[in-house]
Length: 145
Image (cartoon, rainbow, N blue to C red; front, side):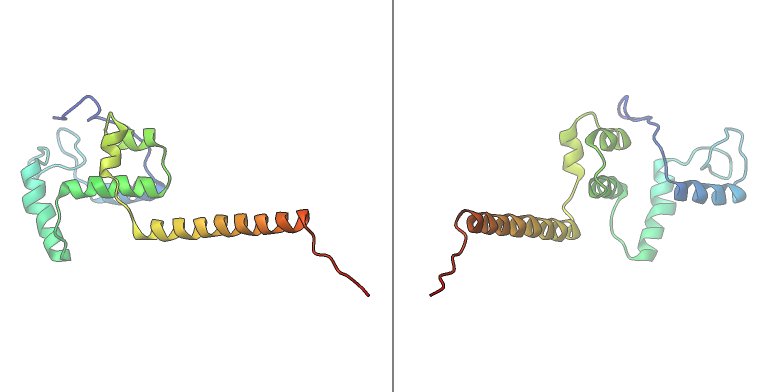
């Protein structure tokens, strides 16, 4: 059951994910409902099963403390880092408003450093151009005696 009409969505996936899913399908056992992820009895995984029996033990083993929702924030942040258009971000996250999507996006230190470097180049070039233009208007003179 999804929360809104944007809950069910279809979007492109990467070649890497396709390959990962193909590898998974080599070990997949068919079930009556044809579910990709199902219990031993062929029923869908429910939120409790995933969270308590699969997800939390894996996170504990990896030493990570977070919940499912953290991955939505991570996804939004990665989409921002790759410069995905806002409409693409909204479609992938299932949001109707850009403001909601922006609320899921977090600043990344590497992006801050990249922006600082780009601003430095722009400002340095602008200052240099102003200096060169000033020289063109008032070229230095040489007096020979």
